[in-house]
Length: 331
Image (cartoon, rainbow, N blue to C red; front, side, top):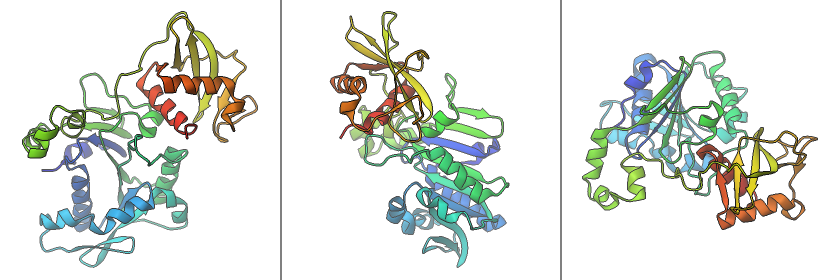
């Protein structure tokens, strides 16, 4: 069983963000579509990951399942030194986003499909997003597309709904809906295949994890890292503490001395004279670049309150962003 892309592609969107159960066949369906397009129309594809190290682990065996299931009986799929071949003819490329600057002088006129696999990172792990990642991807896309329409399939497990791509395009699923579409430009789809869910729940492993947090993620497609803990609106008695800037956006930190809580909000006080930043990209004449926490007293207290569980966030989006900010300071 695998996810069928046919319905997704009928929406005719350029960028398609597909998030679903782990193991529901998102990548399998995308790989099958890539080979089908090559055999029928001679269209090439790119299989993209964020880092070279990710590719090294999987690229040689990427199509083993397609071959084993004889999806294209009579055709041979091979991998050799960064390229995928079908019947000894080059059909696709294996690429890493971190190497995108190396591709700028190349031409890819036959590429019509990009599969960006695992575009959402588990922030509880050791891998991290690239700085200004969305812009890096868009620059990579321009290198490949050259004013042509090249379809992109962004694939990910349901780890967290908040990521640089949904934030960049302000994508939110409407209530009681599993997809949102902006014209013919971008589609966000949450894949929930009831047949797959029921089938996986009946396996021995499925029975083992059923009812657990991991089971909700792997079977029921509930986001693993998204929870409403520490999500709370700031109180009316909260006072403004300071501002910090991250990825070009300003966030306000508020403190309620009576409740002993700090709050992070998109509501800022423009008259506040103290704005912290942690990166050179965000640094400007009106900000204080944090080089050492000991020199940033209020931010250090903010970090200590976070460690002690006294910091709350007005939205899940802010919670995830602050987590990324603190990862840059906690050693």
